Image (tube, rainbow, N blue to C red; front, side):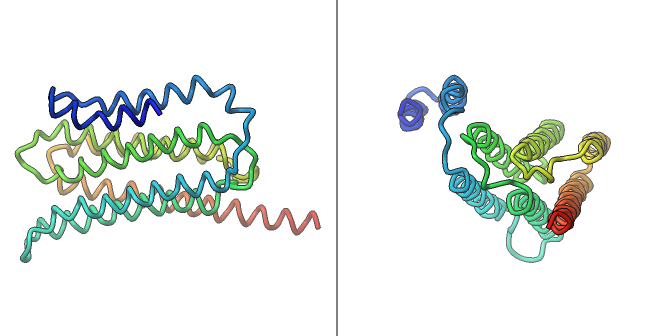
Length: 240
């Protein structure tokens, strides 16, 4: 209730003072939820329904990303506009497919759980997607300094994937990430950061590297999900 009131007051406070209290509303919700975590642990919810609601918020956010990135379409045949539009669309699709792979194939939606951490992780997922949207909008804007754009983009992607991978704590018992999987993902992330910083003055290269990174993560997740599901099916048949 308090968080809702803070959100409602955000616009009038901003109009009167020029200061946004929206981040404090989000922080209050996170801290409040954590403080009540011990009580929530003993209160089970319909986890299947909870995951569906959380997924819908993420899907809505992806839809807003597509709408926001329409700024690249300037009319006519502008090679730069077409290139950045295509790359941005591929990034959004890759991010969505990664989330869909985790949600559809790895998360155990039938488990008994309060879903507290799952909800908190989705706050960071949605926040990361919002930052990615803003970063991509400014990527080919020459009036904005390069380093802040690159750092914001790197930070947003790392936040998204770290939050997404932490949701795997809710995965099926035989679909838990292996050490090899974690090490591979970590090395790819480090390589992505290094390459983005090395080519920080070349926005055309940076956005292409981002596409490769996003789709590389998706393909690894897809392979991991297929492998674990296949092993699970063989195990079940053997048990029978």
